[in-house]
Length: 197
Image (tube, rainbow, N blue to C red; front, top):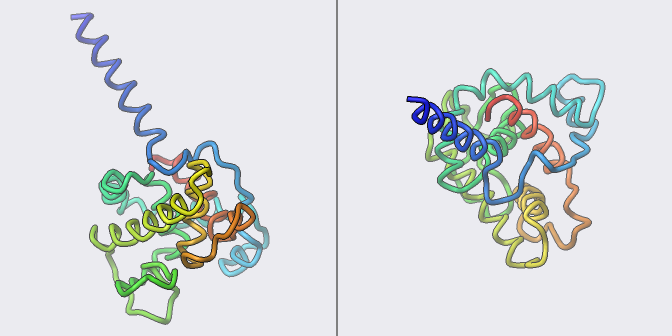
């Protein structure tokens, strides 16, 4: 009987360690980021910026994003992207649950989820829409990998996030890896990772 308990304990440890740091594009737990620019926080009514602002915006969005958590895990496994990164992108692109979906072309670097006023709001994002958003991100990351084969997985993730919003030609060197979108999304993703994503 004790051998059975030992095996169950080991399986639990293996499962928790795999879910804690998975994804093919860097480990968000180890990434440093300055967080959101002050203008991003101001648009959400905050009088501060940086990681503190990103975490506050993620905290505001957390109740809304929790209903997507199982879908984010499924999509994350499909594309080998940490669900916390997917949550970070969704939080940045659809603040406070005002999700607006553009399922059109993304060749110009515009994401699947867009700013209010341009598209008809939806009350629920489907798995296929979330997959499309994540696929666009992975395409951008892979473009960065092809163009800069000596970079690290963390740099690929940063470059992919910057190219996600700025277009494929946005990233030309490591100096372009600190775009506001990337810095804010990574800070939010780290927050979501600590909260079960």
